[in-house]
Amino acid sequence: MDTREQFLKRAEDCEQMARSASDTMSRLSWNRIAERWRLCAANAVRTRPAIHREVPKKGYRRNLAAGWAPL
Image: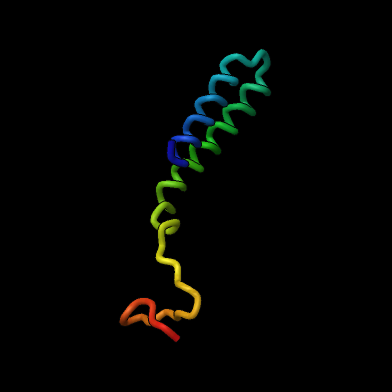
């Protein structure tokens, strides 16, 4: 299960808790938390490429024309 799916699962769990809550304030709180998890899921989709960026090896520097080059 990827990060986005985990966030969406947590949102669903919070929505279930909201449905079973006995008072209005608890329902509102659970729904707000669910919305935050959904925002996290949306953010995970946008930032996923940043997670997989190339990482330089020790002793290398960034060369804009050629990528990573030895020092």
